[in-house]
Length: 265
Image (cartoon, rainbow, N blue to C red):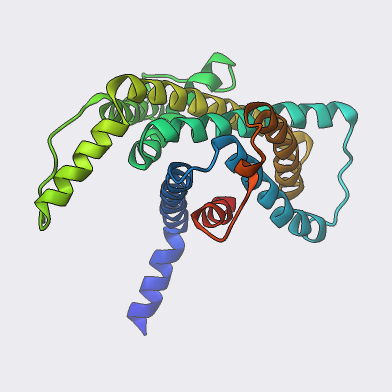
């Protein structure tokens, strides 16, 4: 009994860390499913439209019933929400979906480490946060940013040998390595890296601007639902302009639908 209580207290004290690990697992799954859907022929822009549409439909009931307290929405605030939706959700997700077409799911998951670095840089440039390297918290932020950015750069540019751990099927492994090298030549890979960096920069800008909007509109569920709704409209316009083939909009009972549903989480 004492051991159970001790375990429960340990879980309670480390709840934020456990939640962060859980979120990272979800992000890794999003990268895998997004890559699978786009590799199977789904248009990246159409994928974002369906993702934002499903997210809006899912969040709308919770936002309406759980946040019953009415919060006034001025025209000025609606414009601000529309603009940060364009920057953070529409631009970031569309660039992310295009970048993952030219890279891999592993790279996409690894480069999320650049988001805290970019967020810190943007916040410092906008004078929303200050850093003092003479104090331990400021030094820890700088050191953590350097380590995170270094890890992302290693994934982007370092190409090592094939890992042969538990190499039960060497022929299949060699074929897989050859296919990856064929599908991701150096020029295409660098292009994907730059697009992914742009996506993460847009997402970081959205995180910084999000703080000010939340202070003006504290209904977080409604704010998220509104942003998903605006992003769905913006992404639909983008997708229609980029993809004129009606067959690209078909959504069947396959990995495309599964990826869209999973990424709503």
